[in-house]
Image 1 (cartoon, rainbow, N blue to C red):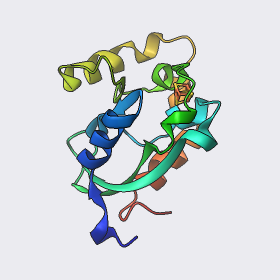
Image 2 (image 1 turned 180 degrees about the vertical axis):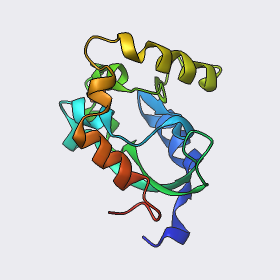
Image 3 (image 1 turned 135 degrees about the horizontal axis):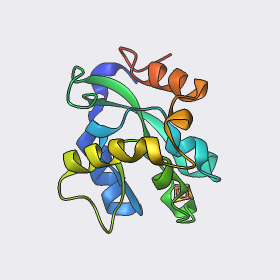
Length: 141
Ligand code: SF4
């Protein structure tokens, strides 16, 4: 798909809100794919899509690759992905944050104290590589 045709992040946000147990507030998603890497059913549930979005409100509004639940019917609601998300962008659809920015700051503040999905997990080579690829201009590797 040419970059010109990539949709705005809100399209995918609304789609997940409509049909998935989880939503992603994409302006706060870094694109490191921590959620996908811990999901036991990743191949069935998740895909990456090119969408227009800024990175943490700082990077330019342009095409980036971001996780999207293409097949939420295969999700087992174990919420491992939720626990692994380092930014709080991933939320339960039935209890979304009223203030995603505050959730972002609170999640970052807790990151050093997490046992399982701590800073070391976020800075694994695979996540750094995915972050770089998914935020590359044009969103492609
Ligand atoms: S809740 Fe569990 S099964 Fe569903 S997407 Fe997250 S990690 Fe995968």
